[in-house]
Image 1 (tube, rainbow, N blue to C red):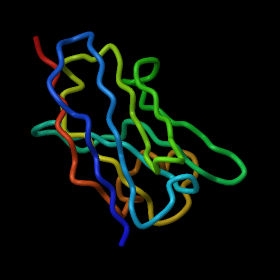
Image 2 (cartoon, rainbow, N blue to C red; image 1 turned 135 degrees about the horizontal axis):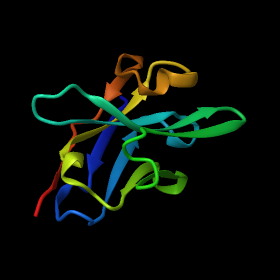
Image 3 (cartoon, one colour; image 1 turned 90 degrees about the vertical axis):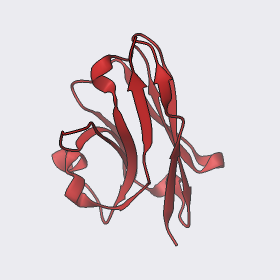
Image 4 (cartoon, one colour; image 1 turned 180 degrees about the horizontal axis):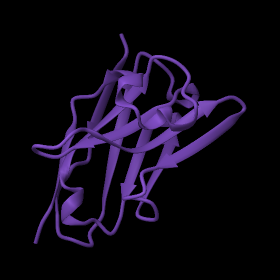
Length: 129
């Protein structure tokens, strides 16, 4: 059974950092595309970042709002994808989810939540002074 579990959320002051983890079971992340999304109260779910595997290439995607501040990475030995979040802002406050798609993704499909069919339970990130 495929399962994704997020962790690492918490409360942080503006300018601070957090590292989110997305641990997988039932499949190997080293050959998988994984996306990070977030949803703030009263707002639609939005794409944050994606590590996309279209062999032999790996492509990294970021939303404009997080470019230069967030970094997605993968530890194959731990079967885990990370989202390092630096210079956090109050507008980054949301529940963060990792997800895996049902098939290959191309171009802007990485940011389309309907392309993903396996989701974790989410982890809360709160940025506030």
